[in-house]
Image 1: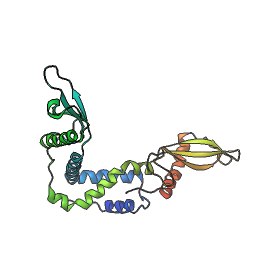
Image 2 (image 1 turned 90 degrees about the vertical axis):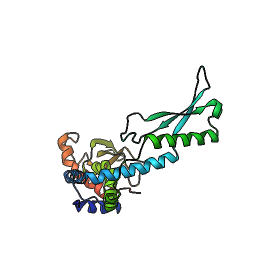
Image 3 (image 1 turned 60 degrees about the vertical axis):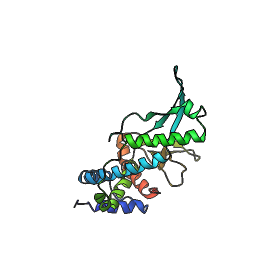
Image 4 (image 1 turned 135 degrees about the vertical axis):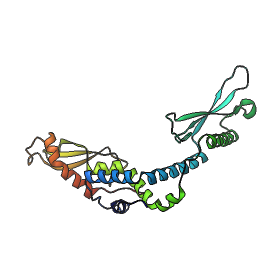
Length: 245
């Protein structure tokens, strides 16, 4: 029986219920790495299962384009360029597109956009990758025993960059002119994730720190940024949540 750190269940509940994430950066990284190292076998087994499922779903509607390749001494060839990001011979190769022979112009004609040719191409592509890209090994007893745990980790792993952006934010300071004819001291947080009240994923989140009338420090120094950083972290904790839909 693999020993599962109880704190990961707490982390899961915090995220799934859109609660505040009660942790600091150093603690989160330590816990995350500890969990991954202790449960590597279980996680890898789950990842194999998930990759197999994604592969099978993808093959139902693969992304490809058809091209006619001229041949001098025979009929033209119809070739599919297929986007493929799954293992071949248990390895994920750097090459993201694969050329697959679909047939000749004598067999299929030259209308490569016809539904009949597209259907033949899909069937040929599926057959090709079912032969070349065998499913990764999965221990289903292990998978079922730890499924809730690995799904929890997978969720946190998918949100890892967003969590770190909250716990250890990157930001720069600026002085912005206001309508009241004074400059506001603002921390501009590097973002790129969903944020309440903002459409899309804003690149930066501005946080008002104070007025230049009240702040006499050189706000652009690293020293001042370290002073302000806890306030920025607290702002993110109180004003943002995780989108787990």
